[in-house]
Image (cartoon, rainbow, N blue to C red; front, side, top):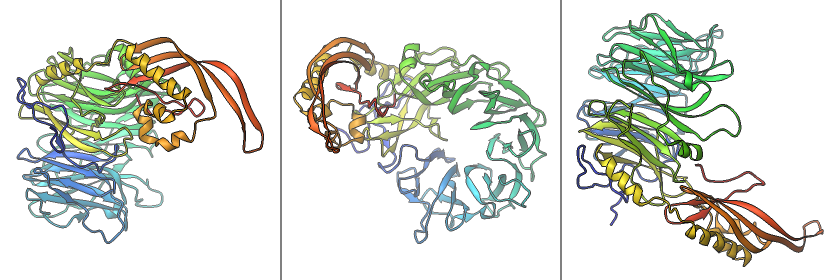
Length: 581
């Protein structure tokens, strides 16, 4: 029996050996969109606080025991909140967001362990006309906020600038707003003592460049602006991190008509920078990035993307780069997936984490090989050089889609096990979603692999041939309700039966036959022959239209969707299909 909010196949909680299974926990109702903004942060006691926007664009904060507080209680005015940054407190969380009405404002709110607001949300940056890229961190008794806004200080000054402000939790005092530098991408990294390294892309200067400013822990001001690298064009992929005393920034530039993942490192608190480039990812169109680093010198960078710029590019795939010497040398960028899978099915949104044991690395990604999106995992015990468990799908509830986002707090390690937040859509329309949390240990992946092997798609084509002929029997007998039920559920999720029925009936079919079947995992190509004719009918213009019988050769795609084969809908005339693999 399912309990409310549980996944059908359970996640075990043990770190060393599989234990009595416990279902994954639903964190929200189905009131989110697939691309909603959310973050999770832990407070000093290790309790989880989850902030998210629902479909009504209301900002909610889920407390550790599951109760939800609305961070925008004022419903007497128009609201258009966006942007989200969070940090944990001693026993609570602080949240930073931006609103557009009645004027552009930046708000800082806090909740304690009882769910009580420490005070009304503070306006901390209205005069900067803040935009939605925000950062928030806590060190000691201070909250540190970073954002960018579009308020010009003078007509001849840059429109976009980075701003910083701090809030003292003990005295409730705000420091003055500090304009750090022009730029449109507020990025930072920190050390445990509270030192901050802030980066931005100075789009308005010549030459354009990435610059940094460092604020030592306890200092009252940032240091001078220092050039990190000259970069003419940059994408939104722009991140910063630290390993030991070495500071890093990585970004995707565009040089000589090609994308390039590159970066720079500093060993002297940002006074000088050494550049590096990942040449084997040249012209790899990166869509997302996840970085994990520790003070021992292990660094892992996971990206997804597609090579080149052609219209018919290969499927999106995942690449992992690693270093065990604090970025002195880097491995080649490698895919964790078999070449034949990568060629036929997309993968996106990787997340990488360093595990609780020495050398342990968990790489996860959103995989489409099963046609519906699933979270897949690979586990390494040697810093990602080899994989002890490879391409293991996590358990899922049938007929749902389960995806990943590399949002802050999406994957963390607590009590010797991994905690992963997933987006679950209840159907194949993928119009709504909820957040669920799965918890599992490294040893549980072997059990997940065993379960997956028991549910592999069939290798025999007998059942597929029966489904193909059932489809053509329905078409030949004008039983379009039956043919509709044989189409892929992504099509049916977006198109009701009556809409489908209105499109059919003019063409009549007979004499269907199968010439060849080729099964490739969850996807199969079927070559068929069928005779098609259009009996005479009068068009809207009064013209009598007809076509004589003609044998047509077709290549159909059929998809194994967990319980049976379904015909992939594809409109050649409109180049439309609804699957996303």
